[in-house]
Image (cartoon, rainbow, N blue to C red; front, side):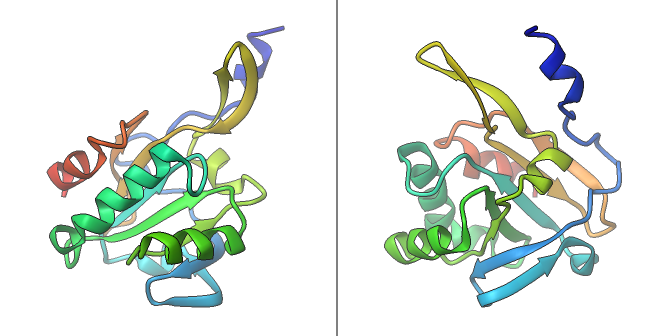
Length: 165
């Protein structure tokens, strides 16, 4: 039944809603291997959570490298975290390969992607599967959702984020 799946999928958080809290493994930036991050501990800062499908794939690499290349325009304005369901080891390799200056959060059990409504049904060559929708959520210093940028194109992502900051 095609419609049944959608009954169990959550939607993106609403603007001004309190951001769903989480604690998860993180690596990169100022976070050494073995670190965890708790979103609620970042209260008082603007936080950009950008959800992407998979480390080291063409679109995800373009998106991450655009953030890297525009890092000087983001630094001091927000804390940026990439989030995918890849394991920490994959994130470490992705960070090293592309010299990414920001941390990546591992959500292997899909807790965060479900809480933010970005774990969705996708289709590739007619085959349906579940995966992460490329979406960015900007959280204000008060811990509330400031903006949700759904289905962003990798090439437009940085400019959209900067416009919100």
